[in-house]
Length: 501
Length: 77
Image (cartoon, rainbow over all chains, first blue to last red):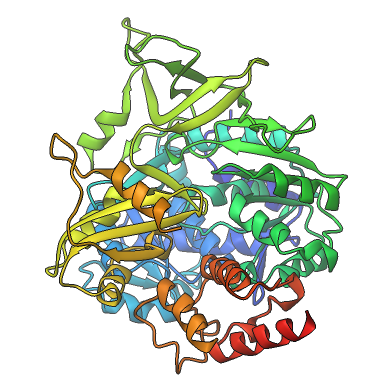
């Protein structure tokens, strides 16, 4: 039985060593190169005594970043992805949380890292891949490895202002990747175009099946997501046949009439998720790429990646809701009502091997969401409470209804509005703030009381929050509306947004 | 017209000097979310249709470039 994600790479490198595994517009790595570089990195970490630790990887997104990820696993460690897009303040919070003693950098990010006041060691990727593989050390590390050992920690938004690090182990990744691949029909001839940043679980959909099947992933330059014609030309140039993208990336292409100029020629599998795909946009895609299969996916980072899928098998009218369908094999969805009883509509609770191990170094938040299965009083069994509400439609398919709290999905990103407020409130010139999500316009609006100017607040937030969490509009108000029991009246603020339209 | 364009941009990034900046794309000041907002608001404000063929980096690098794009599209109508 396979117990380690690296076995994918080892089987594939024996079969197709010289095939391109990962490529971007500058570099490409074959499976042999990924294999040799990651083993060299693992040996380097071992030689420095870094073992069973969270190793931060702070590199420009590229094929080499993937080799660094697997390198930490060869070293018996687990990776914590950081990115240039992250503000310094957030990186500090993450490094504080993991207490990492080592970070892997490239030449460029090393300069940024040195400004961070990081107490641990900074290792240069280019030095690490020259170290060479220490066969004895690597096999010793592997002999001791278990499938419940962590592979990575990725961070999501947290309402207290501190991001939460989700820890995933080999077992849950193997379970997820195998079942996802089976449903989406991945194989050796799959050519992926990766959209997701590497600091989200979403990139697992490309990075791991590529290693498993000997497929190829092209990393799409970020700037192309602004320029739809060039993006489709990129897909055609590389004969990309599979994309698993956030809905906003797909609608950006379809809503501007891109297909009048250029159509994707090789796409066979189009998977989307993280938010609702507007049916009008789906129709445009379906017409442009009639031969492709479409999949709606749903799942939280805490259950490794995606938990449910719906293969679009029928026509949808503009008013219809596309379901998220059914769980992947070896995953169960429970809908629980307020009394924790099974219901037709209720909180989506996930059960199975794909449920991750919890939040790193954060027992309190872990115990709130990773709980004993309320339906099982007899022996320990952890399930994950998503905080999402779902229901079954009359065909018995699962449908996403809403969130229970202030968490939102904005442009495919999961955001706790409270986290934005915490940072805005930390500014001296802000007395009080409230974030409202304008669902119709897909905009985050920040209302505030205080003497600060909008420009000042934006500049302040840019230093602390990732770009996708920045408010789209900042509005000063004289008096914050309150409800009878003294809470910020968010309904009144929503009304205010409506009136201003 | 230039004022309206600047206002639309300022709403997204109050901290950027759009009067002088001519590297909005090259320096990553506008990202893909911004581009989508800018296109939606400019189309509405000036009642024009910005087709995919116009959505190229050269047309979004500065407020001036956007202004020229709007002028071209208004002439086409």
